[in-house]
Image (cartoon, rainbow, N blue to C red; front, side, top):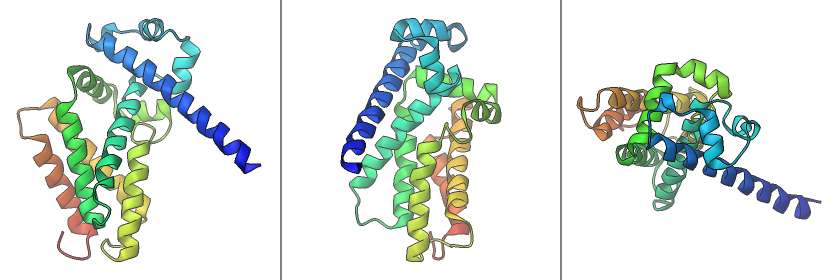
Length: 209
């Protein structure tokens, strides 16, 4: 049974991701042409050649498009981690932080405007509209894996549940990124996120971070 259902499930997932990607790319194209507030879901659906039901099934709301950008950021972080198979948990967390900072710094105006709109609309409300943790779901899963490994190896303090420790890290980095997006001249994003991670690790690490 599993030998026949797994390929089907994999195919469906690839189709889902392809559809999400096409809708997201269509939205970015429109955001490059006009402001976020002037881009409607109808505009995005027309550009992507999909129905409104398909859009809502994948994103829940216009602000949910940020989840696709974050998924791509997480994919890039995983690729960067794959280049460091022997890295410790702390080194891996720093790699994720660096990868995220690089991705946001290199992001175009459309992605940054989308993120600023997300901040303006209210993080909690946007998360609730698209499912708890959906906007950072993939990143939370990745960081949770790293924290679990660190706790098992003794590198990270195991008093906190791994998923909660990961939540602290992800929300901390997200908060630093949000500050940078609204005050880009304040300091470099890499510095802000690296300092944020260091502060969090000071409480999580069993040895000097």
